[in-house]
Length: 392
Ligand SMILES: *Cc1c(COP(=O)(O)O)cnc(C)c1O
Image 1 (cartoon, rainbow, N blue to C red):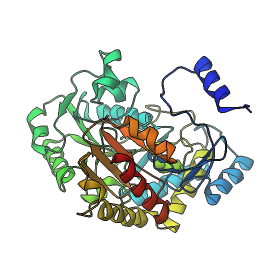
Image 2: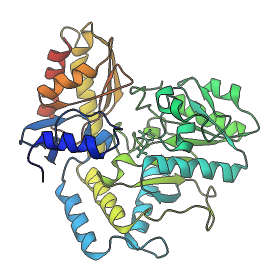
Image 3: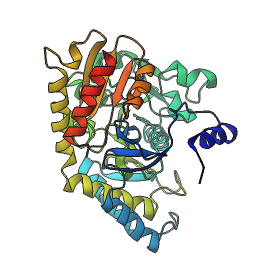
């Protein structure tokens, strides 16, 4: 297609809006947790398409599900019934304990649906979100996203009166609630702002406050869903049921799909919301295959075990990574891991690349590791030892 990576870089610059800063490699193919570049060099991928590629690259069951469905029916719109959509809704309900599903194509879209739904069922219009939150880049989802760097060029944002409270402080929510509050929106573990894990019981305490005060709880499980944290969903660590829940990222193994899930009675009625592509047969068949792999290969348990293994190794008192002076803290659940450094980590991303490891730097000083859940133990060992070398 192109004669060299340089040609790709040059044309990318010419023809694409420069919204992304990328390392100078062109990725061509992948298998498991390994991706290959233009020249066939192999990298251990700890970015996993930003917590999307849970079942790894080109999982044969996912690939054949796509092939089979593509030969039958890719899209007919939501004017008609299709089987994969109904099957997937049933599956999601079973896994999440939620009752009703609305399908869309991305995380931000599922947040938009959640905000609209919360307004409609409560008749109230404002929201409470957390400091450090990330819920997406569309104008509605951006209104409940905290970071100045995401917001400042676009203010004033769409939703008025959104209040941001300290994360991991449930009582702070009660203090800012008022008669205009429709819902509280939270990530069970904050991803973008540096893998911030709240204390056990925080989400449960928020649930109780929302119930007492009669406002809805929206949990954004877009990053934490589908085994990432060692449970099916982040909410399961606290045994909490939200009123509305959003999912996307890992659901389709890389195929774009998102969903908003809600409890019985918290529903749109005919004509109130819609999506042309949402829940099309190809996307749903892919998501069903991906979920079936997560179940069949016990990837939720694997995420939990490998996460514990990782923490044990890096916390080894004598020479574990956490004991190096450049490391402030290592935290996470399952294979959602943040390594907070004492200085910005963008330079380390380059160094890791030279050692053929893909890592991502978020919130300036946090290395975020969200590898495919199928990553092999030897690969994880290699990642740990290379990180140790380059951080020191
Ligand atoms: C990625 C992410 C989103 C946005 O999803 P998009 O598919 O990029 O729109 C929203 N919330 C959380 C927690 C995310 O991690």
